[in-house]
Length: 162
View 1 (cartoon, one colour):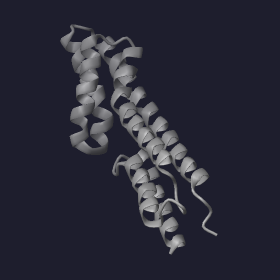
View 2: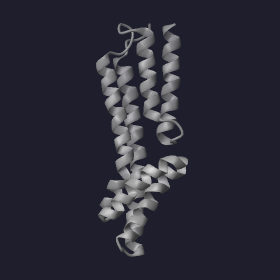
View 3: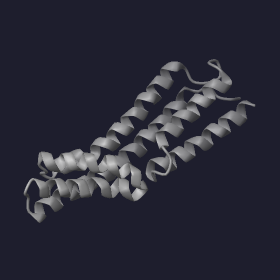
């Protein structure tokens, strides 16, 4: 039975990894759920401890903070005004309702519109949008690294099944 729960956990980890790259599933939440399921089904002596679960929870929260703030800081790095950065954050929030495309395009449109409201030229607004897009792409890479770290932490702390 222990092998069954480990296999189910690995399947959840794989789905979670896919979800970190393609935001169809909440990737790191699924990875955390897999670790929690393993703990609940096998108990403390054959699974991970609560300290490990707390670390995985903190990493999960960090990925969501990274996802939300990446467009903001990307736009800021490329010279966006407060309006552009606010637009990038608002676009990221509204983009959540429009699936994969919205997650990438929302912050870009928000940053560009924010720069237009601030009275910036098209070239400056475009730079802010470009920065927002690059920030979001960086967030995808960062989330993937966080997800891989979560999986590594799980396998380094869980006792061997045999």
